[in-house]
Image (cartoon, rainbow, N blue to C red; front, side, top):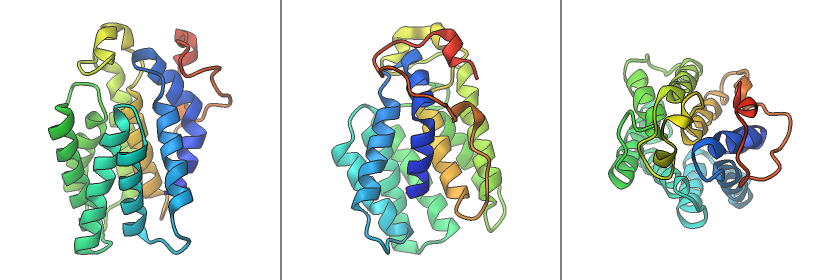
Length: 218
């Protein structure tokens, strides 16, 4: 989770600008703030199961916005799977599958709605056809490709649906945030370049101010 937090810190400005294009502009704040709280609550000797357990509980109970509880569901289901079956790739994948199903059940999103599901669902398809052990670096790359592809989708869920085609050309912030989770998982065993479009050099003035189209260009 510390690596995921580092990613959220680096990407905060970009995620905020992206979310301003088709949402409340608070996704960067919520992801970074939630992970700061998680890392602060973790014991020094936390293993992967404990990390996901603490993270799931924190996001469900403490993080606001639409995305907070949904990310909490994902992390919670991963924690349950790891705790039941051991800290293996198979258990991690099973937890991601269960968590994605929970997100779709609660949030009622399907592939094509321009949400975090548009990263999760196709990346799970990639995981099902990957080798054993999982090549997490390759999977992280695929997750980022799927997240970037949301830029071609017209939003159909939540506040973003009111923006409609004006959101085209900019990826969904939640989808990009989930891509960072896969980046963090891969970084446990590989040295990966950080997604260039999320490595913003400066913070936006306010998460409530709309971003210009030039600011949103990668």
